[in-house]
Image (cartoon, rainbow, N blue to C red):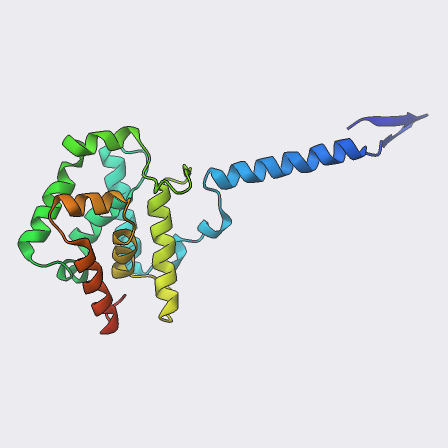
Length: 203
């Protein structure tokens, strides 16, 4: 900022209206850029609203993404870990063979259809956003939706079935793509999740 110096003292000069406007525009520009880059304050505490079981799923998905050399955790990572670690999630599928077939497809994400994922970001396409916190935009959104489901039934923390419902309800997610390849009827699965919720099972 320019200064006006008198004798031994220097005083900051008043900013002109033009300079003030430039400063406001600069702050707005930085804020917009941060939000576009995935620094939405609403997402800061997403993982703090997870149950202990779901927090373990998130840790497993993060390790899987790191091991596979993927730059972001996506819904396929989450689905893979949910199926491996949570019996209530597995029970929502039609049969053991269906779960085995689904896991087989998820294991093969590093070859075949999964190769194109390595050079792209999982995004619903509605608002192109690239997060910088290690989550794909769709996966981050699913965690938020899972938390909202839990709050609607009076729970402070989301569970595994909440997250399954959230990722299955996103038609553009990689998890839904894998479900389709494994022959899972997604609308039927969603209906089964809703039925479980009606019985009071963690959904």
